Image (cartoon, rainbow, N blue to C red):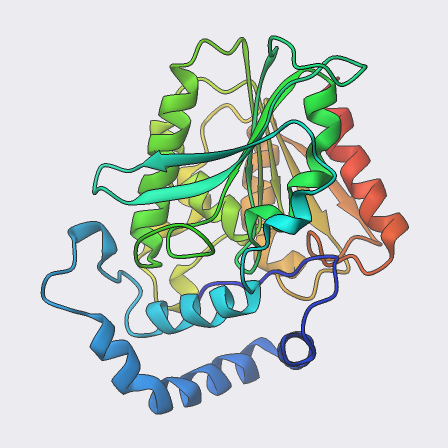
Length: 307
């Protein structure tokens, strides 16, 4: 099972109703409902498994994987460049993967205090959640560009403007490639903020990521093997021995990835030197419906990475 995410901005009513239903049910009930959907959509999912699929785009979590990604990518909605209207330093970017897929996203170019483009001090890679597109949240990270950092965010493979089939193995591989390319670009400082499913994709490839200066993992589950995925995709199995450059955020009010779902990951990371922030008011990233709580969360992210 792959986890949903939301955004602060209003979504179409049907999306809101799906999210409300999903977050109000117990995990067991959710799982039963999703498998009921699978029975209805079995023809759809099997049709997607074509003999010519590339190895990276094979499902590793069973029939539920393509369905779940279809569901959450549908909740993410459609890309809309009009959301970028207030950003003067934004650049449309694309990254070609080793299996010849184009991942499209945006870069906020580093600026000085008066908004002029400047030489960057480093980069921030944002890895969003499962129902979010790049253009929906990139403006939330404008403070990093004005602090002198290039900010990168891509639509996941098969989401928004990015090519390819939405598959866990492929998305993990994509970010191994993206981070490797960024680390070859002579940036002095390398930062990552990975939330929810973005944290899964990030941690599952951690052994390949090389040097990173500071990392935030926000509201990420400990395991996917509880939901039919191989244990090799459990984020807790990929934590480094030294976690002193990581901050983990746990929303005690999170109804998507509950504190119990991230407990093993967070406690293991803490034993290895990570900083842990547990906040009673925080929900899921970009689902804090009280704007002041969302802003406080963003301030925590800025304070840790820009300290």
